[in-house]
Length: 169
Image (cartoon, helix red, strand yellow):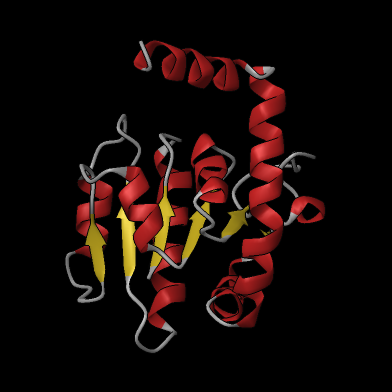
């Protein structure tokens, strides 16, 4: 199962992401696609794109964490869903063919293969569904934990400690 977590970009970018994911997954045997629109996105594009595809489901209301746990690979642009995917050990393919430049945090160096050409998406999905997926499951989670910890300066750890302290009273 492949999931595309889209973002509320302009319609041209969203259309490119959705149709690239569908086209790429359709080249693979026995692979399904979950389209997970961002909560602020209009669903019409996703629903219309999936209408004639038996292997594509639009899931706007399911828990993102449940969908990530169910998925074998996440397709996304730079977003917090990528960090959540890391923590849940769902490999990520970073779609950069719609944006200019890269972000040093989300890069191949940190275990996020960047797909900058749509032609490479289907073969890369196939690879991640196989042996490459195991290595990404090992590399990406440590980055996700480190990045999340650095961004919140340890606030999450303090909140967890506080909840544990209060719950033991």
